[in-house]
Image 1 (tube, rainbow, N blue to C red):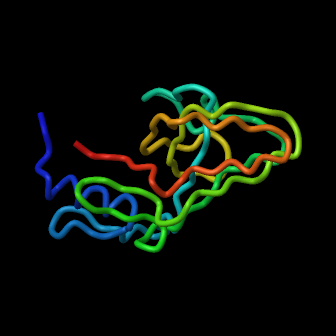
Image 2: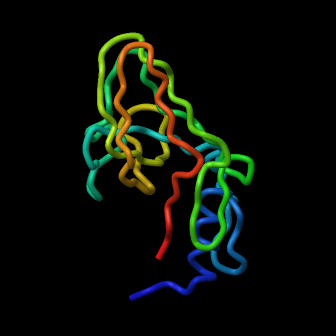
Length: 142
């Protein structure tokens, strides 16, 4: 099974920009999400995982909120990427290697993963290092 290209783009715009799909879906919930949350993982969180599955844990780590609109995410050609680099807090202790990222619904705790992917190259995090997921990181719907 496959989705049509136009629908793939529409679906990404609904999820990442809060743009309604005419006659099918809208963003009119009583409290629609204003941001999505990017997390880093030390291994694949898997399709059954949550945002806490294999989530990195260094001192000062926190998920990063990205606006759920066109100032936060660019959607084009059935792909989505952050408009700006996603800058995580600088490590103040501990270390980790982030091999995967996810985009989910919660700022903390076991939030729902909407999409996840592999980081290439992996991000090696140590004291004083500010981890960054670049705006060239894309998710493609196909």
